[in-house]
Amino acid sequence: MPTVVDNTAAQRLEIVDGGAIAFLTYRMKDGAVEYLRSETPPELRGRGLAGALAKFALERDKAAGRKVIPTCPFVKTYIERHPEYASLVAAG
Image (cartoon, rainbow, N blue to C red):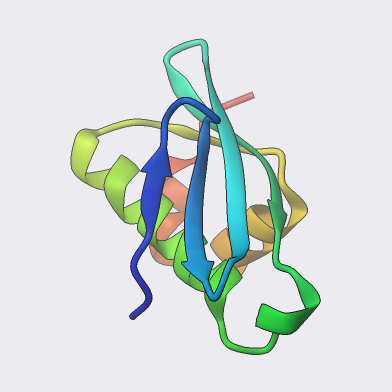
């Protein structure tokens, strides 16, 4: 499992590998965490890094008892494919 770092100043979760950064941006919104956008550079694609970021984020939110707003299409699809996280989605 790659190491995920929470870059709170940039409001994003990051995986750094060889100078390239895969990331998932977020912001707090109405007491929930809104996941906005994920990006994986071409040289890091195909290694499951976006999935690792989503899983890290959702596990962290689950442990903290926070709801999530999956605005990011990748996170939304990840939750659909992993229904154990469906209860984290904020109503609305």
